[in-house]
Amino acid sequence: MDLNFKNDVEAIDAFVEKYTTLKQEIAKVIVGQDEIVKNVLMAMFSRSHALLIGAPGLAKTLMITTIAKCINLSYNRIQFTPDLMPSDIMGTEILDENRKFKFVKGPIFANIVLADEINRTPPKTQSALLEAMQERSVSMNGVTYQLPDPFFVLATQNPIEQEGTYPLPEAQQDRFMFNIYLDYPTFDQEVGIVKSTIHGDMVEPQQILSIEEIVFYQKLLQKVPIPENVYKYAVNLATMTRPGTSMAHAWANDYLAWGAGPRASQYLVIGARTHAVLNGKYSPDIEDVKAVAHNILRHRIIKNYKAEAEGITINDIIDKLLNQ
Image (cartoon, rainbow, N blue to C red):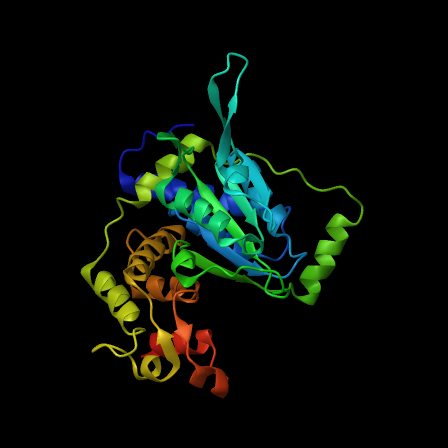
C-alpha cells in the first residue's frame, strides 16, 4: 500500500481505479444492485451515513457485509426491536472482579454498523444511535469514548409493515446524508441471483481497500476544489423547497408543507464532490449536484394534503425543481 502520490490529481486517479475494482469485487456477490452499491459507497467515502428503504429479502445485509469484507472493516449488525435499550447499542458499565466499574463497549463500536429496521425501536433508542452518528463518540458517566474511524451507519426501514413501528422524525432523518430507495431486481437480475445462490457456493470477496486507504481517500475528497456556481446552485435548490419564503418554487408553495434545511445544501455539495471524483472529474459541476439531489432531498421535504390528493410524489416535486 503506497499512498505517497506526487500530487492530488495522481491520488484521485488512483482512487478512481480502486473504486472501480471495489465495485467489480462487490458485483461478484451482489447481483443487479449497481446503483445502490454506488450510492452506499458514495455516502461512506463522504464520511456520512445512509438510510436504506426496501422490502425484505433484497440483500441489504449481504451488501453491507460484502462491502465490509472488501475494505477489511469491522462490522456489526444490530437488529432493532421494540425492547432494545440505548445501552444495548452503546455499551454499559459493569463491576469487575476488583469491584470497580468497567465500561463494556456495545456493537456501535465498529467501522460499519447496520441498524436493521431502525423504525422498530422506540425514539429513545433511535436518538441514542443518532447522537453517536453526529458526535462520533459515546459518553458514559462523564467519560467520552471515541468511535472508530472510519465510522459509517447504514440504517434500513421496511416500507411495508407499519404496525408497531416508530417512524424516524424528519429532524432525525436529516442526520442521514442519503435516503436510498431499494427496488426489486429486474427479471434477468433475479434469475442471476437465484442461479448464484441456490447451490450454496457463494463467492468470498477479496479485500480491495485497507482502513488506512479509505481514511486517506476520505480526506483527499475534502480537498477537492468546488466552483462558486456549484455552491450557489446547491443552496438555490434547497431554498426553492421552502414554502412561504421569497425564493420558494411555485410547486413548493402548492405542494410542500416543509422544505429542506441548510444541512441539505451542505450534503448537496459534499455529494456532488464525491460523485464528480468517482466519475473521473477533478471538480464537481451542476450535473453532479443534480445526480445526488433525489437521494439527499427525498427525506428532507414533506408533502401537504393537496399533493396527496392530486397524487403528486416527492420525486415529482424534485424533478420539477431540477428542471426549473
